[in-house]
Image 1 (tube, rainbow, N blue to C red):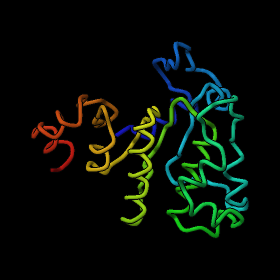
Image 2: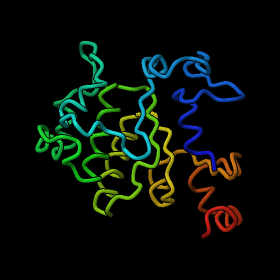
Image 3: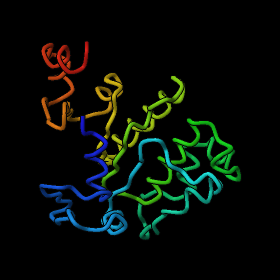
Length: 196
């Protein structure tokens, strides 16, 4: 459909073949991915992609950005408070974690960069229902704290729960753009593109 390609293009690997990507009024279309990350974009990639030989602590602090004084950003203490399981597993290597724990590390690593925009590519893919609920809880909390998120998600119930705006893509084109309520009420789009 083009969802992952969109996420990958925004973060700069690879850059888009056509068009332009603007973030905070700055053209980042041809900027390297490391510089894009420094502009305030964090990534939770599809497939988790944590470092298997590094500990949870090392994976989390790898992308950490210093907080300004009196900032309400993410640091290890806040992250461990929100995700206590990660504190318990702090000294375990990435390859010793369950899929759900690895996903929490991937989300935590992105949050530790204190992003203005968080890109999340299929964060619940392949996870047990209990872990999906935990990630949904975290997404709702991030939304309440006004964290900007571009979420690529195939779980319609989760997307409807956390999104302010929904885009449905088919073959690289946006075929629906609207509120969760508008999508819920649009039987044609649900039937044709979502199989509902």
